[in-house]
Amino acid sequence: MNTLLLPGNAPDTAQTAADILKAGGLVAIPTETVYGLAANGLDPEAVGKIFLAKGRPQDNPLILHISDASEMEKYCHHIPEAAYKLAEAFWPGPLTMVLPAKDLVPKCTTAGLPTVAVRCPDNAITREIIKLSGCPLAAPSANISGKPSTTTAQHVLHDHDGKIDAIVDGGSCRVGVESTILDLTEDTPRLLRPGGITPWDMYPIVGEILMDKAITASVEKDEIVKAPGMKYRHYAPDCSVIIVDGDLIAAKAYIKKHFHPGNRVLCFQEELDTFREFAPLAYGAEKDPDSLMAGLFAALRELDDPSIGTVFARCPRGSGKALAVQNRLGKAAGFRHINPREKSFILGITGGTGCGKSTLLAVVEELGGTVIDCDRVYHQLLQYDKTLLSAIESRFPGTVTDGSLDRKKLGNIVFADKEALKALNDITHKAVKAEVLRLLPIENTLVAIDAIGLFEGELSELCDITVAVTAPEDVRVKRLTARDGISASYALSRIRAQRTDGEFASLCDFVLENNSTEEAFREKCLAFLWHTDIIKP
Ligand code: TXA
Ligand code: MG
Image 1: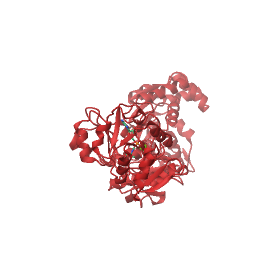
Image 2 (image 1 turned 30 degrees about the vertical axis):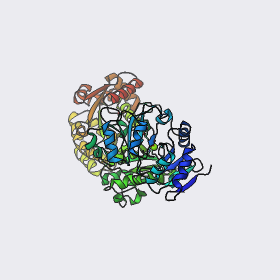
Image 3 (image 1 turned 30 degrees about the horizontal axis):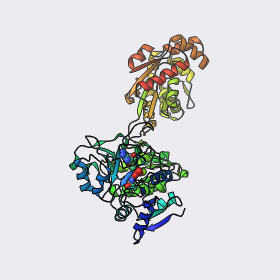
Image 4 (image 1 turned 120 degrees about the horizontal axis):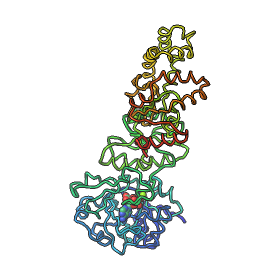
């Protein structure tokens, strides 16, 4: 099929397009929001072609485009007063209203729903085409399903060249994101999709407006939602998008840490200079939400390239027009937001040697959390922290030779003498806490701090919750002799030099007793993380 490109300003374009539509064909039409892929909305066969061309799921209903508010009554019944008032205030314009459908609207247009979405677009040539075709036009956004919407005739040509009859070229779309959808079939109007007409614009006319859940969060595939289209992955370029919230300094620090060659940054014009090392693309100005709406889809299309890998995107805040950008960008990102400043969830883990803390730590790591092992931190500090080494040597003479610590010698001293152990701990805890603070990730993540001296070292103060891992003494002795190749009596002296399980338990918020098999303890750890809400599904 040869796809005609009809100039929007040519005198016979409207008639040519209308003739194609009357004959059951598909024409891409410009609107002030995005380009639509139009067919006669009362002709099931023509409407079926839209679904085919877009690869659109059959359960996703279409909007009927009318040329004048008076046509609303032809296709809808039980129209509330508010609908007339909204039409008066905002039509022609980027507002779609969901109302009870009359029987003449085919089931394939409404996807079998008893309601129909109607809107009168603010585009002269498109309203002229509707008038000349003598029927309402069913028109979804003209993009291939799941892809970013089309805001120029070239975008439509890219997606549908050779697959549809014609494209009317009306230049770039002024608003740039799809219309606001308001459901007026319940007692309180419900916003199903944010757009250029904001809740604040409509509030003086309709009062309270409910916000549909699907606007700001992902919806499960089989979950029932008011606007079926909101549950599908949408607007997404062929790479992964992560929204990086927060101030510019934190965002840059985060992106710098996670950026790989080929990745891109999608940002505000005001931020281009800050992100200059990270292949930035600006989609509009932060202080001008209209420009962000207008530029978003073209930018997402430019980033529609699997070789990019990851796009780090900046998203405006606010509840007016910014809401439409948050929704579209959110959907492109699967609502994945990173707030680099948001405090990590910090889990403090303690317990005596040989209790099995490492099992809990392994579970945290499997879940994508970060583990800070204070024993390891301590040993690393002993490699290069000269101040720490000289403090140890001056309290325990003869334990440090040539800048290296004789651990066995020190161990023999402190594990047999509680006073000596306390003195050593006082020295090391300060150094370890400073290093843990340095190691704590800034991004939003689960962190486990594992430390025998969680409380003495005041690391517990950094933690959201603390947990003690305990185990019967005979089990611990067995583990230690097997693991460290030491005698049972030495293992016992090490165990007894530490706090008792009872002491650890009374200090912590939670206790996990490791008194069965390793596998059973793993299960227990996992259940614990679920129940304490540490893992958010
Ligand atoms: O700005 C726009 O609205 C553009 C231009 C072309 O007019 N059109 C557009 O259509 O965005 P589309 O099909 O991409 O999105 C229509 C949305 C879908 O999420 C669909 O589920 C919802 O409207 N919708 C349609 N009829 C509905 C109904 N009866 N009840 C609830 N939601 C409905
Ligand atoms: Mg769409």
